[in-house]
Image (cartoon, rainbow, N blue to C red; front, side, top):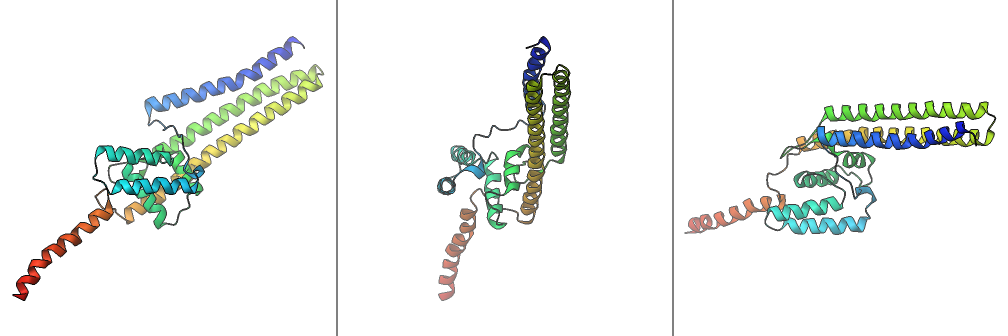
Length: 246
């Protein structure tokens, strides 16, 4: 093997490493400057239905308890096991939105939203899509994709042309396939990322509109808060009926 071939092979091996380091630097910068992305150990659409039912049952049981920080943390941990890395209140409303709007647990818009929760703004009792973060995500993803593809094209052309000139047909075909596969993989990854951001923001707008049109109760447990006025009314009506009867 010629020295040119050795240099080209080393270059081909270094490019993925460089791109990986650049991606890590971008992620690290995002953690320092902006809102860090939560590590997603679980994905909502990949959890079996029976497991989801089991976890939702546990959450419903916790709703019956007195709301304390410990109970809220338990709910949050259960929601995270479902792949829902949001504040507890927003998780409650998200589930209500899914039920009201008949949204499937496998909905691609929901998957994109849960994958890119940083595109949302989460006040205490509300939600809105952060369009600035959405645009920034588009720009960063696109620029990284362009840079990665350009590096592979440049290195690939340099390597393949040298193999072609030196009549090394085997290495020419091998590196042609390697670089072509790498470019296709990067393009597919970038398109997938942009699609997830788009679908996530689309679901975010749907969720935002639903919350605006269906303002929830202030209490964490809407069933309990809804039942309390009825019970108080019944207890207050009792003495009134007795006084009327007398």
